Length: 297
Ligand code: C5P
Image (cartoon, rainbow, N blue to C red):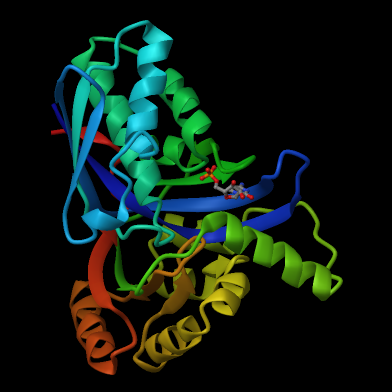
């Protein structure tokens, strides 16, 4: 049983005030892109995880792995022993702001649901996913969607055509809780009043019209100043991409991966080469979106 699951970039990430439960209310426009992890599930005596790929050693291969937690939660829910070996082939950057861990959890839910003939409805899988992490329901759904609440209450957003992206992967990850905490700290220091976030109509119109230029200028991430504060080198990466003609540039989620929007596939290729030459990232990846969520192969 093999499942392919995409990375995400947030086209809009508007962060409301800190809630009593430690989360923030969000308006998040998620967009699934063609950087995929692959997860396979096979019967095993115990629950075990093996991680392969370039950054495999950065991923916990024990019970803390989000895919393992997802498998355990599903097993509890349906009352089976979680006897499964999960093999994960990583292509999504680890702790990069592209929801790679959540993607693996989503893939594990889909794979184990099949393996154990559980037959849960998509909504039931999404509910289990939300208990693992705020981004897991979107990794199940894919395409482009607005996420409300802590990002788990999703509604699909219509998109015309395909958008082309270049991603600058950074050396080392950033901790999501640390970036949210830095965002709160910066806002408090500036005495900012934080209201309830709203979906950007300019952004959803650009998506519906397939207008990359408009989309580029509508991209927005409230976590970006915090990510830059914790990783000042990101400022150089973002500036370089604008100088090299990206239609838009932003930190992906809590970072440190940066996302650049290109006009076309050919432009993305040029932009990727120019960014690589500029030496502002550990590595460069190209992808397009939207793509479907976790899919059985
Ligand atoms: O839900 P998940 O485990 O992915 O969230 C990781 C951390 O990110 C949370 O513990 C919290 O600090 C922060 N977070 C938040 N508000 C959200 C989503 C995540 O503050 N809506």
